[in-house]
Length: 188
Image 1 (spheres, one colour):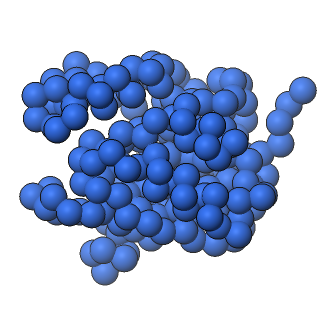
Image 2 (cartoon, rainbow, N blue to C red):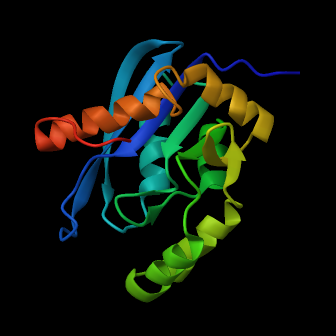
C-alpha cells in the first residue's frame, strides 16, 4: 500500500560564521502540497549534539504536528557537525525522515574531520554510520528512516516543484539566508 505525502516539513540551518562556537538558527518550512502553510524556527549548537532534539521539538510542538507526513533534512548534520540521529527523530516524531543531498558525500573526508577535529566526533561518526549509506534516489542522494526507498522517491517527487530538491528544503534555505544575511545567497 502506497503512502500519501501531502504535508511535509523541511529543515535547514541558516548561514553562520565558521569561527563562531555559539548557536545557529534553524528554519523549517511546512507545506501542504505546493502551498506554504507555515514556518518553524529553532536554534542548534554549532558542532553540538542537540539537532535531533531541536527538530523534534519544533515538529512536535507545532500546530502542524498532527498533519505532517514526512520530515526532509538538508543533510544529516546541521550547524557544522551537529549530527541528527535519524532513527531517534523518526521514533520521537512518528514521522518518516529523509536526508536529501545533491551528491554523495565524501565519507572518508567527513570521518577524518569528525574524528580529528570535532568534540564527540567518534559518536557523531557512529550516528552517520547508523543512518546507513547514502542511496541514489532520482536526481538526489538520500538517507532515510521509517520509509522505503520507493516511498522516499515518491515523497521527493511530490515536493520537488522547482528543481530536484523538495520545496520545503529549498525555501528553508532561502528563508534562513534572508534572516541571517539580509538576503538569500547560494544554492541549497
